[in-house]
Image (spheres, rainbow over the protein chains, first blue to last red):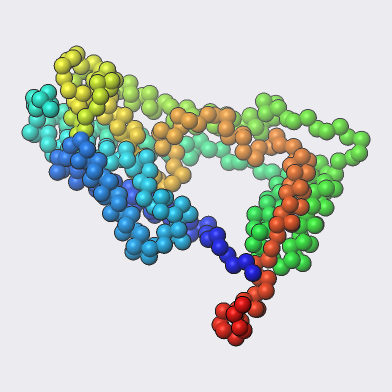
Length: 107
Length: 270
């Protein structure tokens, strides 16, 4: 007989996944601050953002999802890794801010 | 990178009195906007009992349909609910104005301009739109008036020369690196970058998100299940959908005893 093959999600739990976007926001904020304080420029800064995004999602992947993201997140792995446009802009903002504050004296 | 090696010495006062104020003002204005929009939202008008019944009948059938391929309802219950609903849809029992009489002409679709309820919805959308646009223009005017004509900050990443006219407006130095930008560029960085912060402070459904309302129009509020819909037609379509769903129906609990026994090894595996 038919066993449930497509994973079914309980809607309130999916809504609680917005905690994930909060974590992503914090992650991109701190990545921006680190990049700005270290004085990274050009592609080095964006590389740091990539690394931080991958690190954050791998933490969620292994610790929170126990290796099965599709079980918890409707979009699966792509949804987990994708930082979203907002967070990318947040990263650029915080990066520029901290770069301006910290390295302002050396100009 | 020879051009960017030439260092500019910016007064730290610029940082304290331009960079921080712009950021702070934009955050606070975003929060203010959120609360103003909440205040402006008019409470939705109460529907009459018949109109509510009309909508709920449709919702009920949609819920039934959505799970029909793996329904938790046993077949007897499923078919009885489904038949009952499709009969009711056919006879027009749940229609707001009662079942249609045979001689009636089909009602023409309502014009949203003449319907006062739809008009109210459109006005509310327009008001929200105003609350969105006015602060942006005010802040841009404020920045242009007070903070124009000097370099504010150095971007940590290079941009192409095409950005020069936009990001260095009011600074007449053709040789300067594009990475030195004016306060208006800082405004745009904030404009796009603060959405995440608003989401954190105000929750997911906040009204402070500024880049989203570029796409929104004041007229899309009526596009959702507005009062101008022809429910007779919707019911007819829903009845077809119900029949289709009944064909797709399967019970999640079918043969569950055997499956459980087989899982725990009480029956030989197939």
